[in-house]
Image (cartoon, rainbow, N blue to C red; front, top):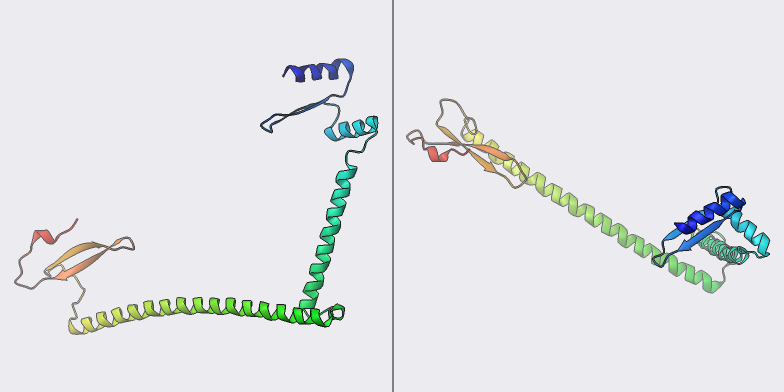
Length: 193
C-alpha cells in the first residue's frame, strides 16, 4: 500500500506515467497504473523508449500455430470431400484402397450403432406391450367379476362393507371395499385411519 501511495504521488507531483505489476508467490496479482495511461500504452511506450519488440516472438509463434491449424483444416476438408466421393483424382491406388477400408469400417460401426438403437426400441416396445397386456388381463378379470356379481365393487349405505386404506409403492393410497357375508358382525379392527 505504501508503494502504491508513492507511485500515486509520483503521478500527481511529477506528471509521470507509473506502472507497478507485482505477482505474489501465491500467484495473486497486484498492480497500479497512472490514471492517464492504459497498460497497453505503457508497454508500447516502454518498447519505444528501450528499442525492443516484446511481441514479435510471440506473434511469430502465433503465426506458426495458425499456419499449422490451416494445414490441418485443409487436410480435413480434403478427407471429407473424398469420403463424399469427390477429389478422388488426387488419390493413388493404395490411398484409394485405404479409403475404401476406412469407409467400410465406418459403415460397420454405424450399422452396429443402428442395430443397437433398434434393439433398445424393440425392448422398450416389448415392455410397453407387456404392461398393456397386464392392464387388459386385469380389465377382463374385473369385467368377468361384474358379470357374476352386478354389485361388485359398489358400496351402498345399507350394505355391510368395510373399507381398508392400503399404501402402494408408487405413492398414494387406494380404498378397497370388502363385502362381508350378511351374517358377519361388524368388527372395529377392520377400520384403518
